[in-house]
Image (tube, rainbow, N blue to C red):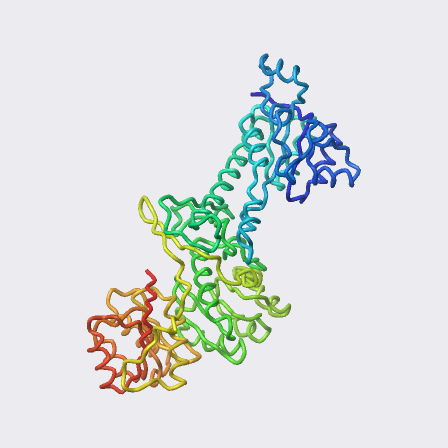
Length: 532
């Protein structure tokens, strides 16, 4: 390999970001430009001299633009191996121009499949054919051709061309080739992954069973300083077919880049605050579990109540809000050590107050909340195991009204119902075995991740006691069934008045009988929310 001068460039992009400036710089360096319909028209309007591909090939774009660059004079010019006599004879015989640089992007398939109400025929039209062919041809012949698939590379390429009088180094072409193959591989995975989710190709809403093979495509957002521990390397990626991802939240202040554990905690915080988006709410997350949560008439009130749940554990936590953070709330938080704050916006004064501590990262999730609008059909969740992964439906259901029942003699009061539902929203996000104590507006105690459910109950009661919170009359939520009466007896002795749990244990009768003995009300949800 050797350095190659750039004499002819083919520009054909869907996303026109930066293409005019790139083309103008290439032209100033004496590079001849070839381009397709929309890109060619834009460049011509900007007084940039360009030859249309249809004019060069003497063959028009056909099938409403489906066929533009699929022509021997295009691919021959890209795949031509310089210095090989047979290839030189071929391009001379057929009047083919050698093409030295190809700047191409792809139709936005990944973006369109996340749109609400999109039709299957629209999705199919966003499956690019000519783009991947051009990219693969140029990448295959990277010894002689530079392939550019990322607008962020335009400026670097121009700088190198200017510094070397129109030449690109072997290393530059090699790096561009790697990025190009990553792009086409990722694109094909997105397409395959999308269609894996559906049964009938004619019905975008009909889900198939779990596919025999799974195609997943992820784009790296950034490298992380390290993983869970300093000896582990790590990076964070986004699923290209997902409408939202917490790592795309806009950072307004604080140290750049979240850590591995920060990402886990803010994701947990965001998924919980989504459950409370209709309320004026605050949640505090520590090691992916909620250690504070409350609803208030004002955001500041909800913050103070959330912090009161477990002020010791809240130290260094991730704090999430369902409303724009105002000055009063920011002042209340100003002296607290907080790793990350996330909210759908901040007043100017609140942002100024919160930004005074440089280590406090501040995220704006307004765009994520706006983009959600319900999850696309068939969304899955997955997690790694050694040598493989587990794959399941996302746990998006909170309560199935048809399954609710009250097995106890005493029915819960309206206030107890509100407390039970609030507790149920919270306990869904606590690691199993999980117990949550709450009023209708405040998380009172949490027991998380214990091997025995009664131990989680003991911890929840102990946490409430340590925080100085009264458990008399509060409600208890258990994300899975209570296997024995011991948790009921323990909670009742502390003053807990009502319980919500899925039911379904072989000892349900024993558990209900215990609740009746203590005069407690109980709701069976018929729905479990294990979170391992």
